[in-house]
Length: 201
Image (cartoon, rainbow, N blue to C red; front, side, top):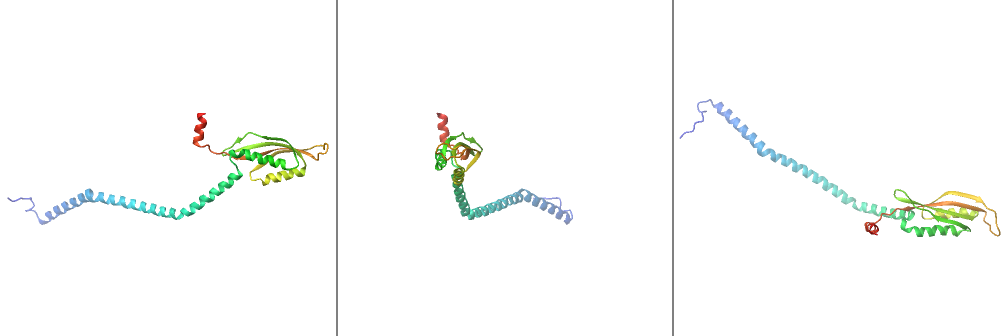
């Protein structure tokens, strides 16, 4: 049995055109349905590969800088420790109070008033004013302020008032000085356990 395509009696170039059209259709179909998804997947994988290579390079660069980062952390911890010595934590206030009182009692003074005030909270620290009044001499008062200036903590002298006093008896005190010694306290964060215990009480 013979299958006739109807092209036997046509010129040869008609068969060639039909064959070319069929070949084009096959190529387009194969490219569109088979090769194009493969090319897209290949592009996606190449992009992912480039991203991974970049991350690997960044990781290697970070690893190379790790010793420097550790040194920087250690330096910052030492700096923090130094700052905490200047700006003490609130739990150290009794010790600090004793040190400031000792300073006022080291000279030839008659301490008349030493009254710690309430904390005045700021963003990350608290101001702590201490009202002080004493009798003495100009020289001794200057020595006291010099000692306060050498103190490891930050202590500001505010509201200084000086007035002459008459010598009474054998006392050689010539002035009465009143001022506020203001220092600063670091506000510590309260641990979660302590907060829970405080709320339960």
